[in-house]
Length: 416
Image 1 (spheres, rainbow, N blue to C red):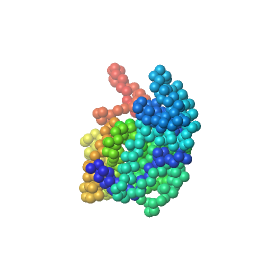
Image 2 (cartoon, rainbow, N blue to C red):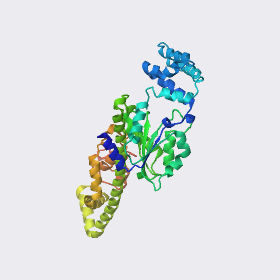
Image 3 (spheres, rainbow, N blue to C red):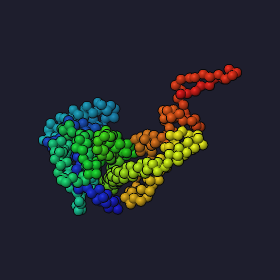
Image 4 (cartoon, helix red, strand yellow):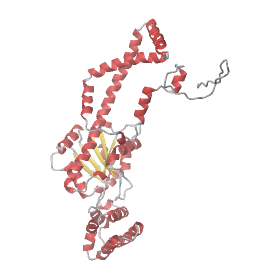
């Protein structure tokens, strides 16, 4: 069932190519021994004893590296040594060991894959199986290293002519390649390419956040690389920390993660279409509002404004705005109810399984701003229109005017 949903979403988004940009795809000549050394030591120290033995096992089996491998295991077993000292000693012993290995970088990569980490062997296999299994698919699967991306990304972005929907899966961290390029570089390249919003979908893999912070991290990356004023392509984040270490359940974990991200990508397209349609109808409704005012005689308008304002104790401008809003709202409602496109979009939104909670949002400031605008006029607007005082009004005291009554018994402070 999950597989069918994944395929349905890929078909709905009309994905024709999937580019997986990750240091996991690096060739031997692209690897950085220094970066791999740090990653290996960190993973080794944090690994359970049995898994650490497996990672060192290949080196222990070889006669020329057996002694160094055993020394590393002995250091790992020391309970009375602090972490920094242990790391330094392992680095020294591991460097001696790698001097005796023909292809040290590739040997470290192989050993790293047997250690637990953000994206272990089971996760990598599940990702490849999801996008490039033996079943018939309608997209091209293209794994790329960061090094290849740096030298070929422009060609990559221009390969599809005419432009076609493309999914980019980007690892945010580069922990093994010599290239200075990382996930942030890739996102910058994509932003500078100014791709069509409907033809580019971005999913970022990172261990920098937990599963419950994926929404926030995605918004953070979107704001950073696609700020307002340029083509805004939302970034959808999948936390590597969400994956189970259970190889038996990895397929379903991987599918579930990407289904969630693809659903959000699909809804973002729906949101864009919804905004476009609403913008058109809103503009039309403004014209309807002005036509309604034009059709009124000056006597009708003055009576409505002055009579209502006096009766309700509001400013003339407030009454005029209400008259326009009524006419505009009626026109907007009519257009919305008659639009089959809009009804279709509303049905899609209603059927969406995505239901973020307030805690999932990076901020709800925009929602709060709209709510405040609904309830309160801004002080500068109220004051400049000389609006009557109403219950609940808030005043900022700029200066104080003192006024005494006939008995000189009270002082009244007025805010202006």
